[in-house]
Image (tube, rainbow, N blue to C red):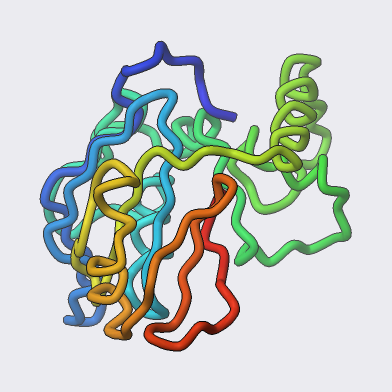
Length: 202
């Protein structure tokens, strides 16, 4: 579960982050600052580096170069196992070993594990937080910021109104698309055809 922070406080700050694996550059020069109260969308085609970036920002992978501060703690200088307890990252890539309820999956974020820990009992505040997060899943949300990735590099980063544009999305996916917004929802349609819209986020 994420720790409490005042609106505007830095939650994550990544500076010139590179990730290299088997001599292959997965991320190159990624810089982003995320503050409390912001709601970010990470968008990019397959292989853009989204999962790699999320693993770094979730304290599950260290950058090859660059600096990453998460909740005021710098990767490489802190106990990542303890830090993960404050992040609560839940991913569908986790290989669950047993059948879990949605609430139990969320609670794995309290321990930073991929399954419920044996003989671990969540505190009342952790149960309350998990229920609150599940409740939020059913509500429409307003995206404030977007980070666009392509081939491990930043294509666009900042306020959603400035980044989620027809030009920048077409560049990100190397395909002509048109960005629309209707009733608070963003959509991408193939251009110039009037295909059915693919809703990106709310």
